[in-house]
Length: 403
Image (cartoon, rainbow, N blue to C red; front, side, top):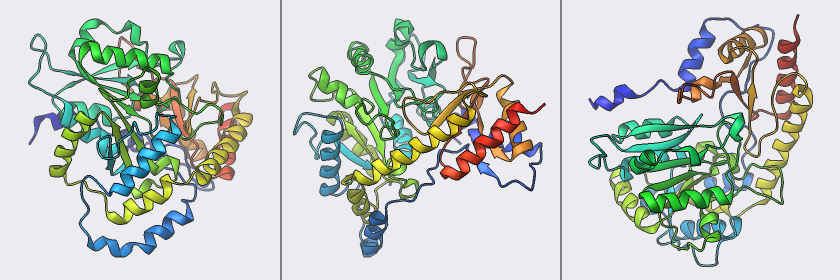
């Protein structure tokens, strides 16, 4: 067996299940899960209809590169959404469909990391925020690299202090994972910071992989989150060199089971990633591609989705604002709440007393520079219905205010 498999940490929800197994929840209260970022809003009916109407296309082998019309739809969406220069996104060279961002993020590291390129006999680094999506870490290990974590704390606004990263870290870095809006904090990286990172990528020859799967869940319609390709445009960089973005329909369109997303950016990198993927066996079914075209072409359902999340954030924060150290994030559907007690005690106690599941922050972070920035935080995903989120908030309030 690949020895790097032994380096993988248990997934956060495995740890959570063990924590919950030590207690029993009250049976008179319905369970409310705020732990997993799985959207529960209704998927768009027109997308489901498109799937139904094209089930006959399941007899066709899909190509790894995907339908030209899907890639063009994605190129057009990127251009509209991120105000890119017309024609700068070439559907033939700059776009690849993928089966969700999770699959693509992991596979991307396997394709781009060169484990033979060491520095002073030290392995290459994959740099990522901390807390983080655990796929980044696992992808680094299985690619023969070492993860290097940059703490996201209240003091730095939950955006890593990239200026404090030593030069030797950048020299060993082959891949920088970004997540903006962030999971779990919802923090958004601005254009100036993204441009600074692009210049560092040029200087030290690494690739930036920007996980932007929460980019369409925001609160201010006049100020949507910035994207990495948009930062490229702002600095006149129309070849997107060293820059790759990852997007998905899971959160945007409430279609996590469709497993549909895309990778876009540097054409030379994507050409090699396509070669890898032709062996990887990851082509998206034609039926799913046609449904994806319908979803990417419509913004009405996405606006309705954002409005539903706005209502939930407003209601929950109105209930919890005076009882829990938590604020509305810049974007995404998570609340990153600081707890006075241990995050483990909070999560276990809340389950035992109120039958609500939240995720301890330390489970999605690692100790770095002497701290685990997830300790004494919990992540709450407001993915349930408005009524369930309100009920959950009232129960959390009861848990916090008990004598």
